[in-house]
Structure formats: C-alpha cells, structure tokens
Length: 185
Image 1: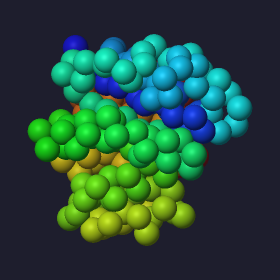
Image 2: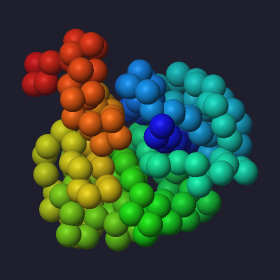
Image 3: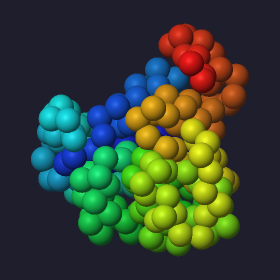
Image 4: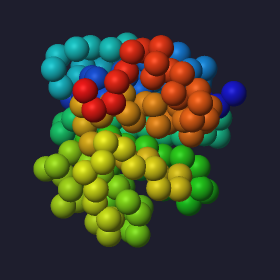
C-alpha cells in the first residue's frame, strides 16, 4: 500500500490540504497529516484548526512514497522555512520519489530548482516563482514525479491526480464518480 505525508504549517489553505487527505484516504492510500509547527493542532488561513496525526520531529521519511505541500501564503512560507522538511523534499526529488504542491507551494519547488524544464502550475500570483518551468494554466500538472496544482478550486483535481498516480486512472475515475465530481462545472 502506498503512503503519503501532507504537511501542515500555520496558515495552510484548509481545502487544499484536506481535499487531498480525504480523497487519498478514501482511495486506500495511507495518508498522514504532519505538523511542522511542533504542535499537533495547526490553524489554517481561515481560522480552521486541524489536529494532525504526527509531528515532523522524529518522522521516518523512509516509509513515505510522496510528500505533499498545501498552499496558503503563510502556510507556504512556514513550510519553506522548515529546513528539515526542505532537506527531505530535496532528497525525495533526487531519489525520483513523488513530491507535490498546490497553490503558492509550487513556488518552493521553483526556488529549489526542481521545476527546470518541467510543466508546472501554481496560483497565478506565484507563477513568477516557478523558475525554469513551462508554466501552464492547467488545473494540475504531472511531470514525472513532480505534481503541481493551481489552488483551492483545483484541490479535487490535485487529489485525484495523486490517487491516479498510486492507484491508477481507473480508480481515480471511480473516485471522481463516487464523489460526484464533474470537471469544468
């Protein structure tokens, strides 16, 4: 069974984080919510507090197949300021393991040189940070083992793309139907 970690910093965008967690768990992917703040409860950009499953300190990254970074301006800044997490993002990228980011968070990949020569997308105000990428306006871009998405309105697309990578396109299509998702509506 695949296992992913979704990281939460104060000010994360609630829907972007929780849509991925929900879709992946429904699809059978073991999904851990991980706080980088040192506290199990993390407050999102709209004041919604979520109790995470794990704390970053002492996390065994070897058990994960993917790291996911939700957006939100403050949340993205908090993730990028977390040296331990950034070292793991770099290690996952170098090892060809999956990494994903949505909204403002793909800017982190741009700053780290991860997007050079790749198709990528982000929240429009952060497109200038996608250094070296072929920037698209697509809802989600899967470029080898790097997945990016644009924002709250594309959070379901992002979650379904992750599910598709680990469980196949048919499973993602079944999930889309089960949650009454209609693309482009």
